[in-house]
Length: 116
Image (spheres, rainbow, N blue to C red):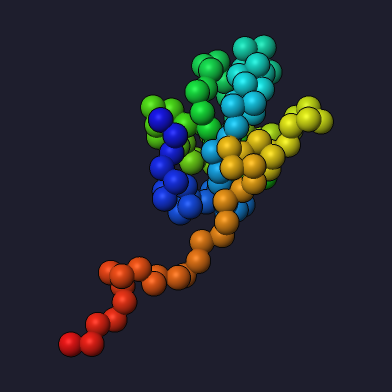
């Protein structure tokens, strides 16, 4: 189950503070191919050995999503280096680009001031 869109808009990369987006299946497949080959480790050097079903991505980092829970711990981040020319982290998002920056627009009906 993908990460809820509303939650995704609120989440930020713990390393650079940038927005996150759902990784495309092509990027997840590439990550899994590196895991299968024993060629992928996280930020603290632990070699990954379990395939991933999904992930969140910033412009430089991949964060595993396990059991529908994003692992947004800096030490668990996977640096996206060595991507093939036809893959880029930004283009490997389900939306085709990273999510927009959040706004402070709280103009929902629930937040409008009332004249009582």
